Image 1 (tube, rainbow, N blue to C red):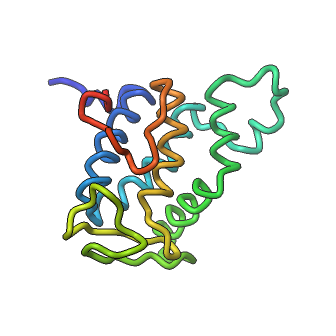
Image 2: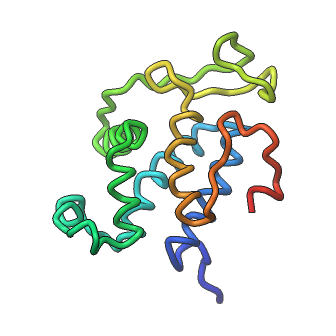
Length: 161
């Protein structure tokens, strides 16, 4: 028997997150929406080996690891806080954000490359892909050294690594 590579390290979990993210971006599903909420929120804990925000802020900036710096950067992002609120809301059956699902080409929401039957998950009226992208890019810079462009124009399977 072989172990599941995604469980072996934070990088393995990021590789799984990457697969789910790109699949969701093109073919959004409720399952991938929920999975991304959990992955984008909890991956940072793997990176810092379970340390809490209270511990990390008390470490001298010059002594913080790259993972701890990432943790603090994520914590300060409004997009990350939205993901955190939804993740904890799912766990406690109480979400304080309006999360809606819609389908079809919608002026002001749809973008170049979206399908006519595109499925969207909106968080307080914002496209969840935009919220996820901002947080995903912080992880991608940390692990891969590069970010994904807004709207993902020109993004290919080869550039996804």
